Image (cartoon, rainbow, N blue to C red; front, side, top):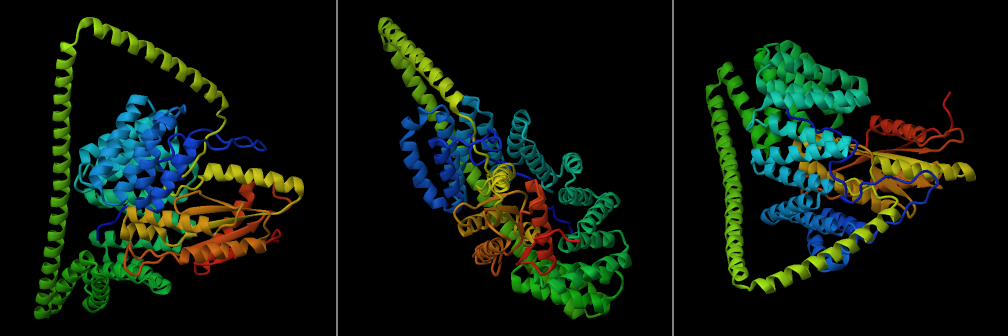
Length: 604
C-alpha cells in the first residue's frame, strides 16, 4: 500500500492572527500595553471567522463601513486590507470560493502597494493553498515561494519551515511528481529539526522522505528513511506513532519481496490496534498484513485478514480501501482455486473503482468550472477597467489646460498636507507603540512565546509573594490519525474547536496557548495542584463533549492532560512545564482521555 505523508508538528502556525501583531513582548515585570482598537478589531474578526464564519461576514462589512476612522490610525491601511483577508477566509470556509479568491487577490495587491511584507506573505500563503486545493500547481508554487521568501526577510523561522513543508507537499503530489525537489525541501526541514532536537518532527521528515522515495521507485532508500522514523518513535516511546510507521515499513517490505520480515513487523501492529480498540487503524493494518500473507503463500490467513478489513471498510463507506481489499481477496481466492468467489470479488472491485473514477471526474469538472468562471470574470473586469480608462482620457482631453493645471496644483497641495500630517502622526504613534500581540493564527490563542512570557511574569509574582501557581499540559489524542484519515483541513478544524472549548472551560484569570502541533499549555495563577486537577477535568470534559461528527460519522475527539504545581525550589517556568509534560505522558500511557497529576514533591 502507498504510504501517506505525515503532518509536520511546528512550534507556531504559518499565519499570525493579525499582520500587525509582529512586535516583541514586554520584559518581566513590565506592564504590557493594551491592544489598540485596530488590534482588537482584527483579533475579533479572525476569532469569529474560525468559530462562526457566517457571523464574520456582517462583522467585516460593519467594520469596513468605518474605514475612514480606522484608516486614520498608523496601521489603518494594513488593517483594512487584513479585514478583507479575514472576510475571504470566512467566505472560503462557507464554500464561496470565488469571493474568497477575490479577497485574497485584493489583499495581495494591498500588501504590494503598502510595502507590508507581513500582510503580503499571509495573503500569498492563503491564495497559494487555495490554488493547490483546486489543482493549479503552477500558481500554488508561485505564491508559496513568494510567501517563503517574504518570511525569510522577516526572519520568522517557524513560518519558513511551515511554507517549506507546504511547498514540498506540492512537489511530492503524484500529479506534480517533482520528487527530487520535494526530497530536497524535506531534508532542509529535517536539518532544522535535528538542530533543535525535535524528535517528533525528525520522525515526520524521515517518514515523508520515505514516502517520496517510494513514489519515486527507490524502495531501498524509502526503507532506510522509514527505519529511521521507526527508530525515532521507539526512542520517543509513542506506541501509536510507532504502529503507524511500522505498518508502512511492513507494506514496503512486501514490495521488496521480503514477506516474512513484513509479517514479523505487522503482527505487533495488528496486536496494538486490537488492544487500543481502534477499528479503522486495525482494518488498515489487517489489509496490509493480508497482502503480506498472500504474498507469503498463507492463503487462509490472508483471507481471514482481508475479509475482516473489507467488512470494516464497507461499513465505514471507505470505497478506496474497500476496492484494494477486494482486489487482494480476488487474488487470494483465485490462488486457492475458488474462481467463482474470486470473480465476484473482482466484480465488486471494478464497480468500486468506477464509482471512485466518477467521483474524481465530477470533482475535476467542478474545479475546472470554478477556474473558468473566475478567469472569465477577471477578463470582464479588465475590459471594463479599460473602457473606463478610455472614457476618462477623453474627458481629460476635453478639459481646458488652465482648469487642469489648477486641479493638479490643488491636488498636489492637498496631498502634501495629508502626507505631512500622516507622517507626523505615525511618528508620534510609533514612539508610543511599545508592544504588539503575538497570537497563533490557527487557534487564535497565544503562541508558545507569548504564553511562556505570561507564565514567567506569573511565576515571578508567585515567588515574591510565596504564592502558588500551576500549569496544565494538554495534548489531543491520536491527532496524527485525524490528518492521515480525514486530511489536514479536518485536523485544523479539530484544533480550532479544541482551542475554543478549552478557552471557554477556563476560569477568569487563567490563560491557555498553543505551544506545538496539537499541544496546548494552560497557565493557572494562584492555583494548587488540586485546583489544577479540577480545571483539567473541565477541559478534558469540554473536549470530549465536542461534536465533530460533521467531519466524519462517528468521529470523536479526546485529550490527555498533565497537571503540575510550582515547587518552592523551581526557578523557571520550563521546570514546571516539564513536570506537567511528564504527567501528560503518564495520562497517555494509562489509557488517554484523562488527567494525571505530577508529584507535588521531588521523587526519591
